[in-house]
Image 1 (tube, rainbow, N blue to C red):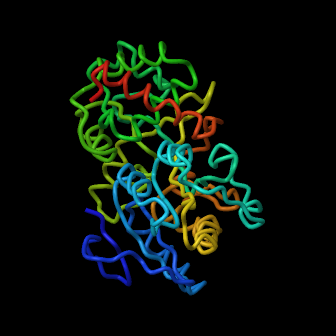
Image 2 (image 1 turned 45 degrees about the horizontal axis):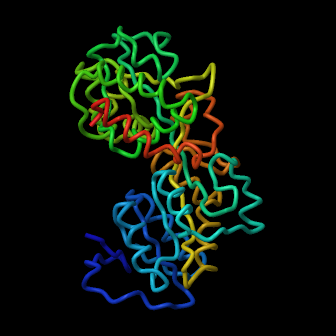
Length: 340
């Protein structure tokens, strides 16, 4: 069910008529579901007087909804947590290229935005290897490819292969080394799984901490949230694991992003642009960094201190759209290998 969050009250979308088009509002189709983002939108409204209306849903469902609504869509800004969905929406002509002096001045790295301005990264997260401090030496794993080696049989944990984070990682490997080598890696990885893929990244990290596996693939912000959690049991989990940024001696660690694009049929394009500029401002980027433990895309803003402690790393210098283009191939390879 799609939910509209309006003036602090949630309603089923089916009970509402389409948003009215007013000069001082902006409508977001949003698949980024983090409570901390509400403060960002509230601050934007306080600063500009522009009301933010949010329809939440699955990214693929929202893309389909924009397509089916056509010119009558109330959507002004599409926000999602996967570069592949942004690239897909842009390829289908659903997003309008947007730029401005304010956006240009922020200097978002080229690999975290569309070259024509159809979408812009808002925050990034590295796909890392988490290991058990008492059972694994970090020098044992240098690359993602190492997880397919025989020594890790029955020791690797990961979420399902159909999840966007898994698909994006596999697609990035296809972009880097081709389908044949990537399929060999996926087969080796699946053969080394400690259990059937299940749960989210936090579940993989917890499983490493209690010994269900020795290494796991996870996003950095899940580690950061455990480290900074108010719950002692979460911090204890964090104390038992270490992190490895893979492929530092070659292409760099895979990075995915949350991002946004202005919908081509938007009735409030100026307001959508203003919101996009605000989301990339130091104020909003600080909230992304501290509220959800993500890496800011604005180079003027530093990550949360706990993420800094994880270490500097070389990120793969490839545009997110480049690896996103290989998502269909990645899905086929993972399906054949049994990464379900």
